Image (cartoon, rainbow, N blue to C red; front, side, top):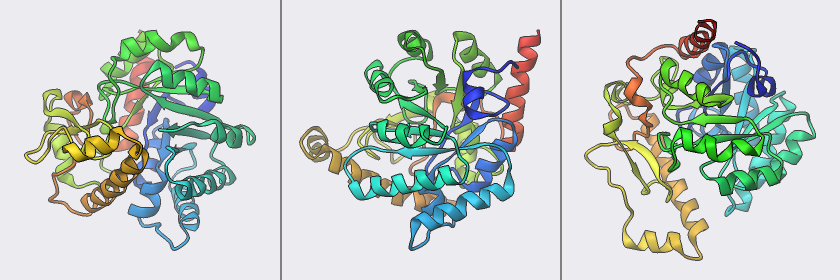
Length: 330
C-alpha cells in the first residue's frame, strides 16, 4: 500500500484510525489496534476516569496511563481532544493533557466539538498534526480557518455522534478544501474500507468494529449485540448528550428528550445543558463499563451490518490493511 497524506501525518503503516470512544477505549484496546499497523487514538477522559488511572491529580493519571500503553506498544498513538466551550475548568485541564501528550511523544491529535485553533497552535509548535471531526461544510471551513491538517468526515452511518450526509456526499462537498479527508462511519469490513478509499478518501476511522474485539473491556453482551445486529437495529437518540447519538435499539431507548430539555437545548443555556447531559451520560457509561448485564446505552453505528465476530483488534487492523494491499495488487 502506497503512502498518502494520512499515513505520512500519522507515521503508521495503514490509513486506518481506531477512533477514540468513551468509555470503550481502554489501554489494551488502544495498544492492540496500534500493534496492527494503524493509528489508535487515546480518549483521555475514558483513560483517567474509567480505566484505572483516576488520580486526585488527573494530569498525573493521564501521564501514568500513556506510559502504561507504551509498555504494550511502541507504535505511534494519537490523542482525542473534545474542546466544546461551556466549561472553562475542563478546557484548562484539556490544555494540560495535550501538553502531557506532546511531552510523551504523541504527535497526532483529533479534535471534536469546538474551535481547534488553540490546539493547532500547541501541536504545530511541536511538529504535530491536528485532524478535526466535522459533519458539515460549515464546520469543515471553520476547521480550515483554524489551521487543521485534515478532516474526519463523520457521515450518517457513524456510531456515537453522527452526521446527516452519506460517505459519498461528504467527500464531494469537501474535496475542494485541499485537506486529507478521513471517512468515519459505516466501516465494518474490508468491503466498506475499499469502497471509501475508492471514493477518494485518504483513510477511514472505525469505532464500532473495535468494540467487538477481544482486547476491548466492554461487557460481552455489548460485543454480542454488535455481532448479532444489522443496520436496521441501529437508530439515534438525543437523550444522552443533546446531539444525535447512534445506538442499538433496546426496549428502553427513545429518540427525543422531553419538552423541557428540548427548550433548554434551544435557548441561551444550551451549552450548560449539554455539559450537564454529558456529565450524566459519562456516569452512566462508566457504570455500564462495569456492569455485564447493562443493555441501556449500547452505542454503535451501521457498520454492525458487516461485523460477524469478536476478534483481536490487532488482527482486525492488520486484516483490513492487508486486504487493501491485495486489492491494489489485483
